[in-house]
Image (tube, rainbow, N blue to C red; front, side):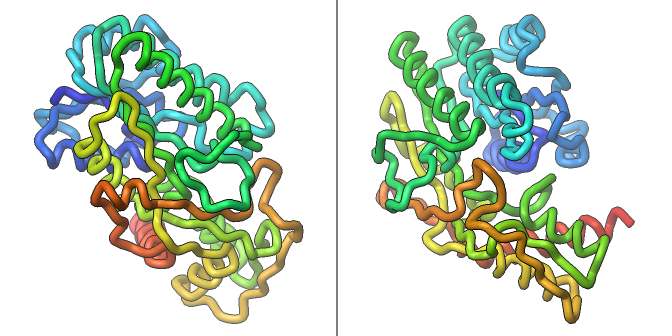
Length: 317
């Protein structure tokens, strides 16, 4: 296939491009590099089936040109503002970078007759909910602007599908960890301990508990769901059945860095910041019935991600 990946220089998007190219597809990507990094796709320089476009998805004429020339059969839409805290400080950030980018892609798909869309959504659409989260739970009331914009994006994908015959796959990600991450708890803990190896401040009380999915497992889950489900609108939770607490991550980082006698200071409260969901657990029976399960546990994914980030920093010195 000819495939467009939006946000392909980003953490998850770059891994997705690697997998699509390995599968024999022709891939183009659009990324404005506001969060993505060229180093994530540098290894693809000169690849005969890959092309990079540096531009903003909200520049409609430029995006239309990419669609017009690309003759795409499917779009994997990965672009979003992934910094939830930044979205709380700048309340139109997710409107623009998460929702309106989705709308721009859908408009171009309609205009140029692209009939397949795989969309990166999130557990944040569920809001704060004590139940095990299955795909058909509701009503949904997100507590972050990121989650609200992702939920609005899902609604528009449904409407565009019904009106214009676009077949869609919506994948609701948990917390994703691994090589090429640019932010998140692992990245923040390592940075903080490099500045002061004697003390680490942990937001919340440390009991926040979530499933952390290794990025390469996530990509395999997306591609499996895309290949094996054929409804007009397909939607899945992707994740692992285990969880990891923030305190456990702190101890994993301290041990991996070989540090001793680190004082862990807890900022207090039941969550890291306003808009943070302190704990959740997915029901994964739908994607499991389809035939996919993650290879690594949550703890294993976290530890792989820690080692990858430490190795990256060592190489950069």
